[in-house]
Amino acid sequence: MDTKVTFYLDKRYSKKGNIYPLKIRVWNKLIKKAKLYETGFNFTEKDFSNTWKNKLIRKAYQKDHVKLKKIFQKAEDIADGLTTFTFESFERKMFRKATDATNVFWHYEQKISNLQS
Image (cartoon, rainbow, N blue to C red; front, side):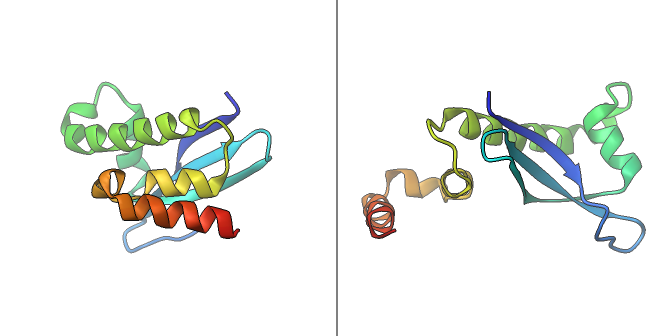
């Protein structure tokens, strides 16, 4: 496995009340680079620890934990499923709309874009 997916509480940017944005960190061993992607969640350090890490307190944060687990699993599945990992291909699969998978025009546009580059 050349790609590692983790959650990253981005403490570089604080919102009010010491709330920080939670991001997905994707690191590839072959490329030796990492990128951060928004999750739409914001937590304090304590709330993130209770939601993701602390199994004893997690019941109070069950809804957020389930949503985060889905995001994490999707990112891991996509990263592991790519034959040759590039951040562009990861982003394309991770952030495309659900309807794009069955949209023929979207696939044509992707193929044209790949051929042009």
